Image 1 (cartoon, helix red, strand yellow):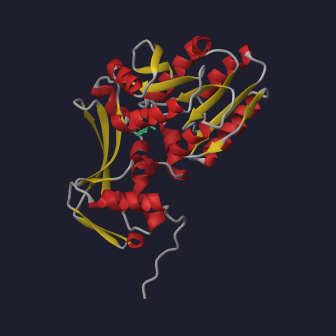
Image 2 (image 1 turned 90 degrees about the vertical axis):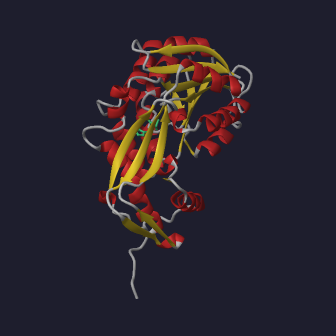
Image 3 (image 1 turned 90 degrees about the horizontal axis):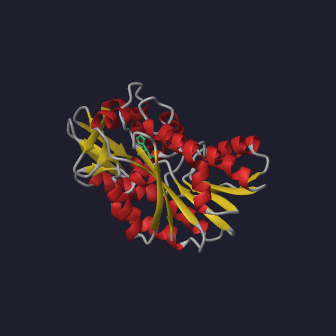
Length: 320
Ligand code: AVI
């Protein structure tokens, strides 16, 4: 009898059903939230430091230039909450400015990755003794529910262009849920990447070092780890395309040959033809009209937008 390697982690029901439906549909797709297991979250942190990936450093520069104005506009006596915080590396700038305005502050970073949150706690705790950091391990759904239970006047951050990985209708649904969890006086900061030339966008999603390719292929390695699948990540290539009409970067894994993959935990065989793709991610690039539309449709009022000099990235302050 054939024995297979023991699984390192068991896939959740959500993972199993997303993989089953995504790999049996035409064209094949996998949801981008599958990127973020421990290995994927670490690879994403690496992406944020790449020279081609302008998003993180550009957004950070906006915080560095305008943190004072942002907090002035948000109001006094604030509790900071960050959805999808990761290691909260950009939030330091805002925290530093906040602690010049109030003696103490509370910060609730919310993320799916316990190790990223631990790093946020260590880093911020060391740097800011007057800051109390209360990490919450949760996905977006759980994170938005947690917002309801946080007391005091909140400044909720949803930065890093995370909104870009949702389809426009999903973004509106999510923003609506965030808006419903805010009370009078609370403010919301949204970070979104602006549409720009393909010459800048494509390398940002297909870097020379191949870190984004490894991040994309980690999805296959994850299915091997959690579902016992036998994907050969080297039999796929990373593809990044700019879809101007939909204003989004599209990320795929393209099969380099005709092949069959077995996923024992799903009792599923998946065939690929040479050149067939799995669509793993969209990353929407916003125009001001698009930002205004999603905020309006979700019941927010846009109060202010800060951008870098090249207008590559925008941070938007909105209220319920
Ligand atoms: C997390 N998110 C905002 C990233 C983005 O730019 O869409 C994920 C990413 N995908 C490839 N590179 C980075």
